[in-house]
Length: 381
Image (tube, rainbow, N blue to C red; front, side, top):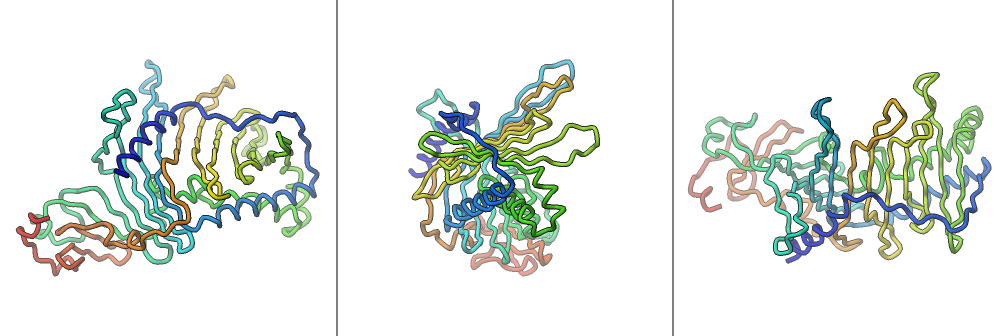
């Protein structure tokens, strides 16, 4: 019942993912001022502390994100461009204090918004579907969809007898993290691949403090600015703009502009990557307040192509929508162990870190060379 309820909610929310993002409410009073260099440095420190405190308050977090990817593609110069849309479900279990994460990646069909009798979009059986368990400093596990045919590392005779089945891989951390399908909420919706959203304010606050030398301090004090915008009820937004050194002497300057909002614990609500004055990348964030902790409820990443005439064209949109969530509640420790995959008799495991192969027997995984195939045992499963 819980799964059907989640999918029912998915139907309603996925339909919203394709709509244009709704920006945060505009300020009622146009009160805005530019902070001086000393205030700028102090405010960067403040922002880093606020974001870090919010993220550190997340001890455990489990839930499901719906992920929709829309990409513009050109078949040929003689045809109009078209859009390709794919739908995924990303259930996850995060124990942040122990640095443990489990996440599933499941492709689904497009939900039928008109069919109220069949509100659950079907999971697509696809080789792209995968499950991960990542325990920092211990192991990274990846369970693929069912595969047929030989896999290097297993005796040929045994593989012929088994025929197919899922394969569990033990990999190095970096192998999992560089997989484009891998979803770590800390690096996808609470931050970036380089770390928490607090990282940039921390880095520039340190430079502007003079800790890395006076020359660097003076250089970056001209590149980093903060505008303070007063909102209704004395809430505020802090707009941090950073100018980057151009790649070529005559090229347009590039900027990043991030808006942090006090209504959401000073978490970012908008990021813009500016090519001159034109944004070619826009990220928007909305949040859900759970016991004073702000969780990303909807995150939209949009990439634009700047055309020669100066216009921009949307080419890619990725939308994460939080469907269900449990915060700071106990997670069964079995979720982070191999047994939670419920491997069936004859399913294989390949340990890339130690170059060893195993096969699931009645009592667990055994070295592949010791496995004795029993056809009756396989049929019972």
